[in-house]
Length: 360
Image (cartoon, rainbow, N blue to C red; front, side, top):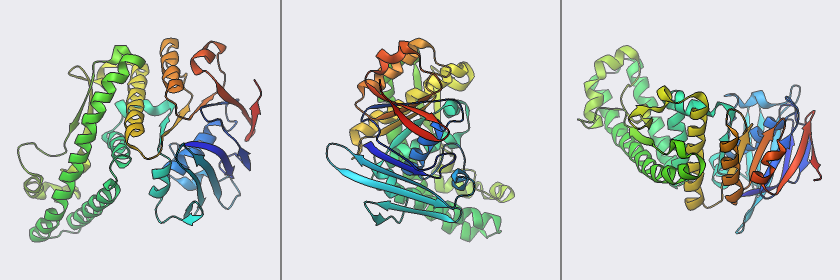
């Protein structure tokens, strides 16, 4: 899905933007603080309902404004759709072709997107929650009923933790565990099946983008002992879980083990290599989505040159250019030596929260 017209109002330092992106590569150039990252953050907010820079969406509202609004006219070969999101300090409103949305997931289905940003190395070196989120976004876009099942699991997990915290008896905990355990096992199964697809895609992708990391391996580690069913594991841990006030075994403790050979990647890769490995994971996700999503995914790349050597810059840009997808890049400066790898593109100058297309 390509954005053909983008309107942004009162988002951070952006005010009343209205411009037409190119169908392929879009390069946003300008000094630091000009608003380049804010533009792709606004697009990400539209497609995900959350920012990749702050956990509080209301922080993105321009100081003194009542709300921000992002509207995108999108199209691909098969369809055209208009997505809109408005956020106030009190909540959100979303529209899809003029119809009110009940869930932000309705927008996400139409605008699958990957964000490649400077802190993406945390997918390798950060905590398990980031990797679970990465997997869950991936499964969401390829399994139609995944969101409903994920929500059912989260609800059952909250109920169980509340029962632990409030001192409920063993009988109550066992009853709640009978509901939670099959939901968690199904959630783990969906992640495991997706991980298998990722592995095959990652191997093919590494050959073109980062041959030196072609020995990366992915394994989904489940969040409870392998030797017993989850229901039994939950019951066996009740005494200790009561002390902690939360359940310590289940799909909410799954983790994606990323290794180089048999060694955890975070202990052996440099920061630059971690960023490259995380980028491979994001591109592998794109490949899977391109095969299985109803709408073609979108790629948002914030500062693509940071910590990548020239060879890998060229390889990544060439892959993006040959993908046939719309992608957005931000940079303070753009070396002319990378123009060939980028190919035909639409260039914009961003300054003081404004955007102007550059005639090349």
